[in-house]
Structure formats: structure tokens, C-alpha cells
Image (cartoon, rainbow, N blue to C red):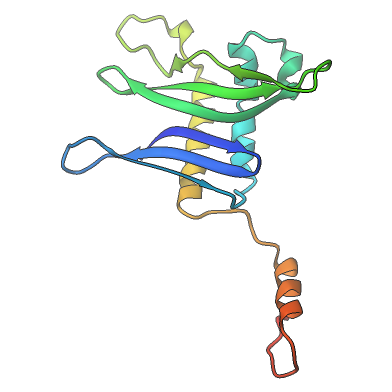
Length: 170
């Protein structure tokens, strides 16, 4: 599984990914969006990229708290299919009603060719954070979601049951 886009906006998760085929044809691509709440570690993994947005966009370190990371677009290039990424975020502005939309420059996780300038690549820490986000997205695809509120579920079930012959949730 290889991710192309991971996004969390307005309570919805959007994931686009591809899966390599066994017959060596072009990979199958899948995309979906869901309003199912992810586990808290999913948006936390996205938000952990705020410091990378600040660094790549050459913003002040104090701006990190004003950054809300919305998503990441991934690409794979070169003979070794090296992962690259662009992080999409918004910065809250003091004197404006709307946020500033930010896209980091696209950066590869390592140079595409031998002898390339590593200072132009994603940092090792950023690559680790992106890997963590991809792990979270994979879990989401596999059905891991936010834990249900069992007390709210009990109340909802009890509310819909009418009569003593019905079984109550305890």
C-alpha cells in the first residue's frame, strides 16, 4: 500500500492510496472519504507536522501554534521510487477573518540521484512523522476508529426500548 493523499478536514478523513498488483500492471488506486471519527492519534500525527511546515515555509518558530495541518500529498519518483511530500496547512492570522493557506515546497525523503543535495530533502524527523501518519492512515483503512462512548450508546439503546419485555443494556 502506497499513499498518495491523506487529509483530515471538517471532521472528515480523506485517503487516496494505491496497491501494487501481482501481475506487474499499473497499481490499483483507491480513494474514500469518511465522517467516522479517527482515533485521536490520527489528527495528532497530522498536527505533529506543523513544525515541519514552519521550517519548510521559513516562518517564525512562534508560528507553530498558529498552524493547522490539513493534509499531505505524496509522490514517488526516480528509479528507486523515492517518497516525496507536500504538506498542506493553514495559518491563523491575527488581522484577518480567514486563514492563510500554505503548501510546503515538495521535498523528497532523499536525493533522487547519487550526489544530490541532501539539505534540500525532508529531514529525518519529518520523514519519521510522515511514516507515523501513514501508519495511522493504514489503521484507519483497516477499520480502527475513535472508541465509541459506551455510556451514550447505553442511553440511546435504553431510550429506544419500550416495555419491560425488552432487554436493557446494563
